[in-house]
Each structure stands twice: as structure tokens, then as C-alpha cells.
Length: 413
Image (cartoon, rainbow, N blue to C red; front, side):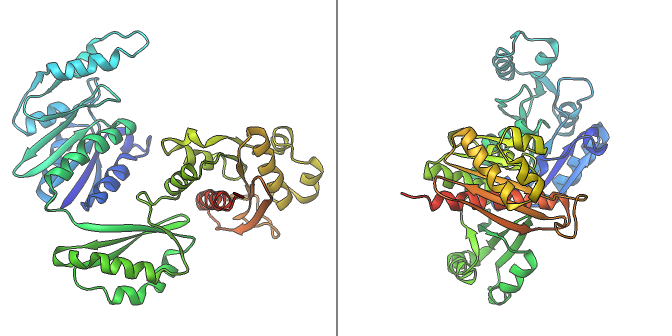
């Protein structure tokens, strides 16, 4: 099964907002074995929306559109799609009740004209209830193909994809979906990993394929089976894990490091905290991005300035003067300080040179100290990541989660 994802909105084309909907939709479709073959962004005009729908439905089995479903006059997707599918906009009582229920939670709790207009929907489509906004999702079918139109607000689109679109696709396409398995390998560059798996790949039979999906600090591997090769998926999945002997990898359902961290920390039943300098709050962002983080994450301190390290975390001013902020001593004191401040079982700290400026011959860009404080000892390690700020922040954050989890697993019983 092939999919095309279309985002609608001038704000995307002008570079004013980042398109996260396409990434989320593609990942959700991939979980079903549906391959996204194209992503495109178009202006919120009838002509562009029609052209995008026409092209996508000719080339793909499933089309996911996001954007242009707001209540204002410049949101044209509903009317355009109604015309395209040969239907008309009508007032939908069920949708109106959904909107009424949603706006009742507003501070004023009253329905206005723009809210009411959200109940004007194409007569011939399946409505998808949006529990996080007023714009209903719309499911159209044409010549055996599916086009789904969703609001562009990311948390609304993600909710509808996860709770409405994917379950329907799973039921509809159960007999046509590819089978695949995924795992995540940590701390290895893609090229090095590929070299290590070269012999394994050379023995894969027809219909089995291995894909590399790299990110900063980890690489996801997807083993996909097509047709008769499906019977050999388990066999070669086992062989893949054997070929990865000696590597750090996880088979968690959600393979991103923050998801693995969440599952394990919750299972271990410990609490954690973070003190961040060079990562600027990214560790806390990763931890709290996973639902349920309030059970184990007590809080964090972004201590970018030395004054904050001293006043809030209790770092020694003398040590900062003697060793510098990017040092083992400061990293240790930061971890100990935030652990004491929050009362967490374990705490992690990062201090380093993210770049692009601030490096020196002794401490070049990419130099990062990471420390973990627990009920017993405090451990610190020195890392040299890359010359790119974004990669340094990402790699340091993922490594911090890894070390924090490792310490929690080794805690005294």
C-alpha cells in the first residue's frame, strides 16, 4: 500500500511554522506497513488543493491531508474537497453537538458564528470526531482509494491519526499490509552499522528488505517482508539480532530512546531529575514528551549561566573558576545539586560546548561532560560528539537518558 501526505497552508510555505504533521503521519502509516512515497505542501487555494488531491489519488492508495479546516474565511479545504468529490456542504447536527460539547469547556462556554460554521461539512463523507478541537476530520473514498482531511493543528492532527484514521485503515487493509519488524541500535554511525551487517544483508532472500532510518545518536532498522517472504520474517529477524551481538539495541514497541527510557524507568519505579547546561532543557523535553512522565520525572534546572549553577545547584564558585563550567567536577556537582533540590532517586547533568562558538584547543566544540548522581556514587563521563550544534544537543540528550537508565538499572536492591 502506498500513501501520499499533503500539508495545506501558506504558513508552511513561508517557513513560518515547521511541518510536523507529515512526520507523524508517515511514522503512523509505517507502523502498519504502509509506505509513504511522497510528501508535499501546497497553498490554501482551491486550485492547489484540487491539483494535490487529483495527483495524490492517482498515485497512492491513501492520501492524508492536513490543514485548511479552520473556521475563518481563508480556510478553503472543506468547500474545495466537497466540490472535488461531487457533494455539497450541509449543516451536520452530529458535528454541531461535538462542537457544542467542546466549546462548553471554554472559559465563556458560548458558541459563536465561527464555531457553528465548523458544523458545515461535506454531505457525503465519513466524519471523524475531533476531541481536541472544533474541526472534524473527513474521510472520503473514490475508486477504491481513500483521502482523509484533518485539521492542521499538530496535536489535533496527531490525535485524529492515532485514534481515528489508523484503526480504520488497519481494519480496512488487514489483508494488504506489509509485515515488518523494527529495532533501534544505539551509539553507532549508520555507515559503521551497515558495514557490520553487510554479510547479513547479502543473504536476505527475495522479498525481505532491511532499511536504515538514522537519527542523532541511534539508527532504527526495519526488516520488511513482502508476499511469500512473510513466512521467513521471524527466521531472519532472529538472525538480525544475532548479527548485532555486542551492539546496544532495543526491541521496544516505540524505538526512540525517550520511549525506551519511559518504559524502563516506569517499570523500575524510580524518580529522576535533570540539570542541563549545553542541552538547554532538551532532556526534560524528551522525558515529558512521553505521556505518563509525571510518575517519575520530578523536575529539571536549565543552568546555562554560572550564576545559576552556583545559586540554584550549589556548584562551587572556586571549582568553576579553577576547572571551568565544562568539567567533570562541575558536572558532578550539578547532578548532585538537582538530585538534592528535587529529592529524585537519580539525577543527570550535562555541561559542554554545543557550538558553533565557544570551543578551544583543550575543549573543542562537541566536548560534553555527563554525570549521573544516585543513592550511591556519582559517575561522570567525557564525550566528544560532533561539530554541529543540533547534533551535539541531540546526542548529549540521548546519551544522558541512556546513562540515567543504566544507573537506575544498577541501583542497590
